[in-house]
Length: 117
Image (cartoon, rainbow, N blue to C red; front, side):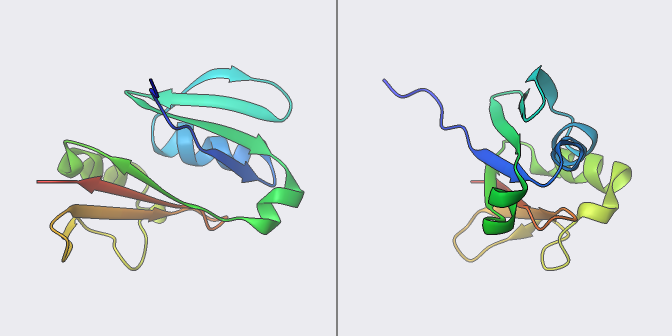
């Protein structure tokens, strides 16, 4: 049985990844060494990896499904409005029926929060 898909996200420096996931999104660090941090919140988890080589090759878009997108918007807009994506900075109903909100960090990593009806 498959339980969870966990993305590996590359950053030039570890502090860039921890800024997005820990400082902005409130994830907790479950493990950290010189080049890897495992971060988690609720049922979401990610591997933050320091690698300038791979960070230069890949700036991903990550989707996180939620059941309370309005609460996430309130928290982020109050705490870190600087990461709200300029193209989708508010909760918006998309043509496919989902409510979405997007973040864009200073390194180009995009996080889309999605709530299905």
